[in-house]
Image (cartoon, rainbow, N blue to C red; front, side):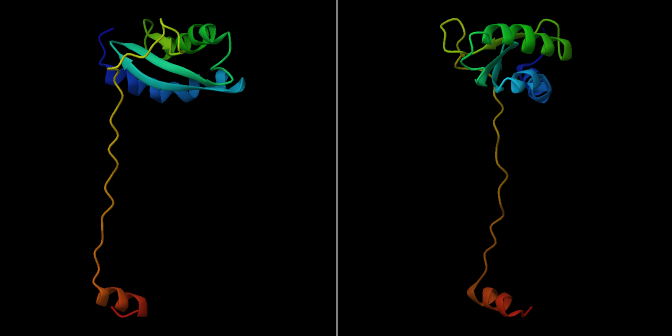
Length: 119
């Protein structure tokens, strides 16, 4: 695939709610952990996180549906604690920067005027 990890992450993030319907119906969820070199790393949560069928769910449900929606060569790895399914240190995850809240500085006199209704 010739897509940027950032683009793949955004696409998967947008489709996770639609893809997770099956997993949700079994008491689980899907958490998107990151993308590296076109490989998507997730973890199944809730009841699905400890289920013996989690590998099957990852490949036959999650990967299959995301391949239909995004790209037929997409690879999904369920980071489940096993040696072969680990999260690389340098996966792409967007850096969210919270918007700054404007700080309004009032003098004591302005605060008193506001409290008693003087403009």
